Amino acid sequence: MTLLHRLLNLPARVLYLALFLVATGLLSFGLYLQHGLGLEPCPMCIMQRYAFAT
Image 1: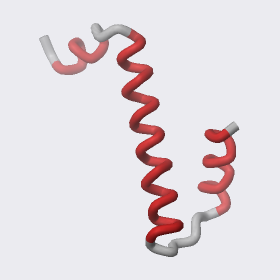
Image 2 (image 1 turned 120 degrees about the horizontal axis):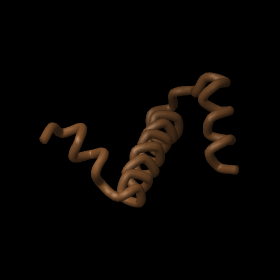
Image 3 (image 1 turned 45 degrees about the vertical axis):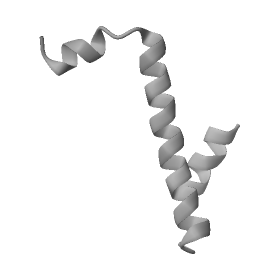
């Protein structure tokens, strides 16, 4: 059984949790780059953060 088959056989709840954690981690990293390292986000990044927060 391949890795893809194993991933697809996981319960949907586990997949949704994994996707949520990845998305939250990426947004957190973006906020770290902005506030921790002083990099300014592009307008699209700001719109994505707003859409994720609402």
